[in-house]
Length: 70
Image (cartoon, rainbow, N blue to C red; front, side, top):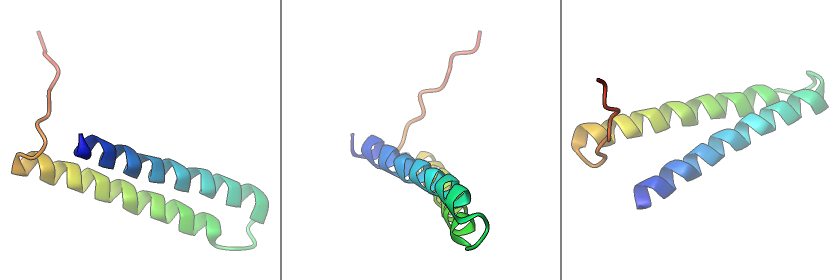
């Protein structure tokens, strides 16, 4: 349960930074680097989440359920 909560919280942080980037893009009109900073944070958090999930699967902490292919 703790793993799922962590993944959801990180996903919410990703969505927040995406929204912040959109907000800064609409309000700043290119006057600052806040849009770039928010979107950079989003990319870094996303890459870290993918890496942590991959490490968790590799270490056996997370068991992927897979999709049955017939």
